[in-house]
Image 1 (cartoon, rainbow, N blue to C red):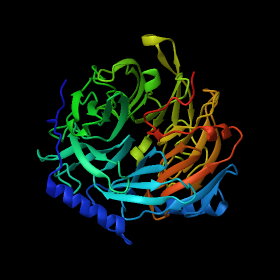
Image 2 (cartoon, rainbow, N blue to C red):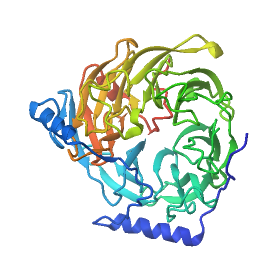
Image 3 (cartoon, rainbow, N blue to C red):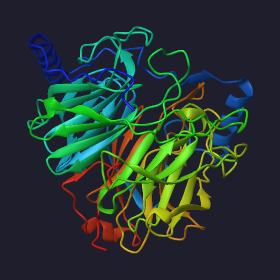
Length: 496
């Protein structure tokens, strides 16, 4: 099956290069905000609240059940080292990637590069203005990849928003040269079917494959109608990234995927994948695909093969992301109940909805099955004005234990142990109180990842956070050092 869009890889026009360089220089030298937020890309995450909701929130704060506005609370075994507020890029903060002494942070307005050689004092190296939600980000060697999942006038960083109904609209993957961290260079772009909500890298010798996850929002988009039943696979020659191209669009749901309502009320219809995590050392991938969870083989990275597929039509609304444990015998799937725009961590919702689902992988080879074991959800109830949902996290590399750190939006950061798949438990946490009591507002950590001895978190509203975890159960992880980390491309931390 071919892409629904025409594949386009472009060398940057001289004028576009000069414009991008000028924007970058402005941002690098700015002392005040230089980026103009693009309202067309910003998620509408603020809703009015009732007087009773406000009263309940204030009473919960007064009683001590919920921290006050912007008040920081945390367990004794985790320490907040520093916060770097947003600089020139004022949009929504998104995902994170790491390389050596650098952290790369996505933002709806572009991306930021931090020098984290001194974790207590991160230093901004570059801010690149390149609007296009949601700017999911990853790095490989001298290349940086950025996802665009909103309709733009063209593939340049100076593009503007444009209705998806316009045939000239562009969405897809942008590629930058980051050999000079101070001055990233935009070098190529590949248009993909339904854009790129997220993406995952699969390094393979002289090439890097990019698995592009996207989904069809409705029948109203002429170039992106259901069935959108697969993923775009881009092949990027490392030494000639300008030759990047789509090489396959494998169908993952030949039966159309989960039909959603009315057959399965409260479950999102599957029209693509939200996120894919790969474990290259095991030739495995796990896909979180709206109404379905997938386990598949990537032995041939251009032709992934489905091994097993599961659904949870009782408690999961939207399969959002996936994380393997190190032994590759478990997968944690997250449910983004409310689509990242609702308060789902309160007593009324309960412990099984908007939670993580822990699945054991049993069997061998193509006979492997995903077997459900339990749910995990933070038990620290949030106010009805706080958007809270299970979101992006990563494994903390402790041999013999399954531990991960995870972002929960305004639920904060949770460190939890799922060594016993049936009895997961939280062992550390950090969170801020509501950003406001005047509306249901999205804020808090989008991504929280463990990298080379520290936890790094990209807070949607507050900026870049660095934390230190001191706990005998996780202390062995401090000895593990990586040269590069894209969390959706899980490394082999230990020789098994």
